[in-house]
Image 1 (tube, helix red, strand yellow):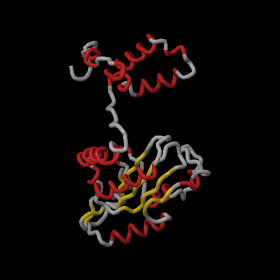
Image 2 (cartoon, helix red, strand yellow):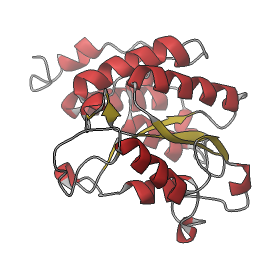
Image 3 (spheres, one colour):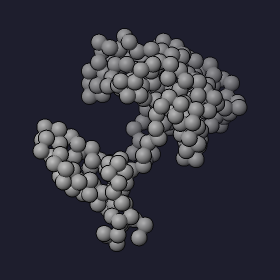
Image 4 (cartoon, helix red, strand yellow):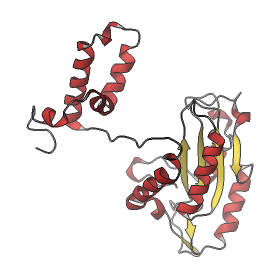
Length: 237
């Protein structure tokens, strides 16, 4: 995502200093709040690259900006680009994996790295990487992660980092009428197999099916084309 004060598209404004302070756990009211930060585990976080304080991150950014030419900046200009990488709770060797993520980011984005911080004080281990939006002596704003660029980056990341680490590509989600029909088909199959009898965990499973029925549609061999044929308003008809 881009770090800026823009509110375009309902985006929440953020500046580079606050982003760095969050990543380096300098915003004390955040600890133990709704974002699930456990302050007892924050000492396990790792600064993989860059300064140890947000003020030093800003100093580094200002130093690098002296080498970047550009027009007069708007108030909501892009101050940084942030990449985030996450792994499951039980994933082993996460530090080595995040190091490979960082190396890939440096090569694929081609932007100066300001900071890379691994968080181990929330539910899933993850890493934030802050990049200066300057390349070839000029400001590039958010263009390195526009839609075509982001598509290429995701493909490259899977080929170079995620795939070799054993991860699989995420499956797309269904939308609209076909999603509703797929959800109904999966839940009907679940009732057929007697799964709701285990009521202590059925609400959780039903919620996951409703959110994204596609993985179970594929696993159960449900024919999406047949579902589309049940309703002429379904996409693709």
